Length: 308
Image (tube, rainbow, N blue to C red):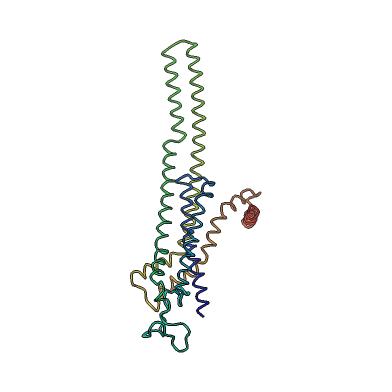
């Protein structure tokens, strides 16, 4: 039934496009919050509308275009650009063989080039975006760690001690008990201020570093979820580009197809676990005696619903 095939192809196209592009949006969001130090208010009011809008708009444009141009055809889950089954070999486009309802070559006069090119872009460009953004986050976090090691609290305290020693030396050489007392008081005040500044700077840097590391771990987890769901089809696309695709499929190709069909629908579940894990862990720590994971998950889940 072609109507069912059109509906299935449209839903597969929409879900695949939004799922892949949302993985890019998540990593871009993490990159913006860490490397470019964008606040949650700015991200929510300015950036998030694009991170939501671009995947949805691209999915609708691609899906509607392929639907109108009749580029949802069997087999392969009704996502084949043209209808060329074995019984259509040697038959002109538009002819309907006896016992069949769908014309041979359906979709060839539509937008098959757009279908193939958009599929290649969808499967090959997002992995580059995900990996690049993840590497940029990692590089920034490593820079923070090196900066903390170089300009941390120890360095500031050593500078404070040197300042105190210098002030004391000047006091001894210049003489005068009253003057020495005043300078000692000033030196002590400066030393206290430097220590307080050192402590506050160290606390702020530690908090920023901890936040950056948590964002890095979250981005890494989302990236792993993305590659678990889409790496089989990315590999198959590369194989197809290398002209190593066989019909009927070889056994090793079927293995990739089966792995993709198993893992790909679970990407949403993987993302849900990554999203909930920090809150669940926090709820579990607050429980007496460590508590249970199930109870912590239930509390986190219902707290999220109540806050919405």
